Length: 511
Image (cartoon, rainbow, N blue to C red; front, side, top):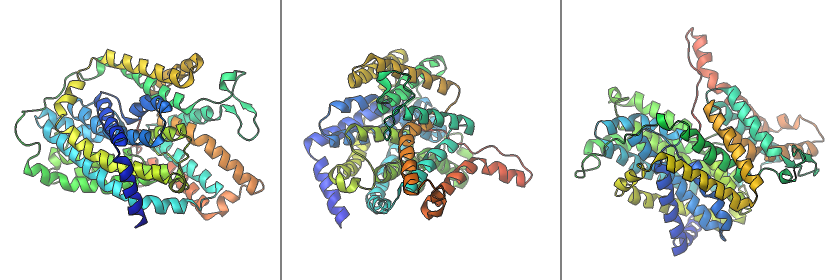
């Protein structure tokens, strides 16, 4: 009953004219930028993150960011279906079938099942977030320093192991993130580390700078370098009359919506979760279970409904470890964590006590943003299609300008702008040579926290490493980290035992 009261208080906050405007602005901006080819929610929030430095209240900023996240995922499905250009890897599964449907003249049905499925999954998973966030936060209060160290290790190792095509490349990306995270003065000893005598580095490399550099600048450079290879033809939407979905479409979609939600939310809520794994699992399940499996690869509506539901359900799940543990499990969650730090708000077990009004307003905004997006997307689909016609060179030049102005507005330093471009060029080469970006961000954010908790544990345990193995919870989390390293190679191991060959299990990253 207390949860219901808190939620009603959150609705009262969100339904104020100012916060409703922030919600509407967030979903509109998110959809607008998400529709643009090659741009996902992480890049969208990274571009707009510097704007929040001038905002007085964190509540409006987080409501806007939640709307941007949802809106970018809605918009990303439009690009995936009409252009076959997913803005994030979690949209790849839906693009496989959605674009084929569009080429067969069924783009309206594909867009409708993606939008309605996202609404259903988003609403159901937000209910799950409402019910489970507080109990998990209460459990997290019992965590000790060694538990947080092990949890950070689990999050970083699992993302590194499951994201990208090479464990070695993932480990190198993680190492780079850890290196960036320790630049500056040591928080305990005040000794300078990797500053190379530059006073500008004594305060460390700002997280916002890294995020804008890797996502906005790096992605813009990467896409600009391959403009000639991007699809330029937009699949036809179809006639202006008639229903968006036939009765058969509804019959084939509603079960995948529910199954996608059931897969996406729990995976997102795991400390090693994210949206990539559940979307591909949903697609694979629907492909093998459907009575219309012969249509897969040619435009099966179940292949759009299930993954899109899993994608949106995972977002609400991702908020659970983010809000209750302060652990981001995807690149976009890491960017959102940076927005919390802008307002000196620390996600974790105490957040529901110290900033209850903020958290429940954020959760309430998810319900409202979902409704706004459903109303916004289907009737205005022809408007969003016009956005796809923006010339690519002008689009990515604008992103570069906006990113530059954002970094300079935050820091007021040309050194920081040049550093952001250096990070951006680094991100460009990482994409070119297939190095995953997500481990870098997690290393930057979780690295300092992991180091601090390790040193606290060693101080409490009198420098005895056995403390990491004698405490059951810590040992369990570290064991799960080891399992996550083995998991990608499990199909190959099983195949060898059976005398067959198999590929390494890989899930593309969420940029």
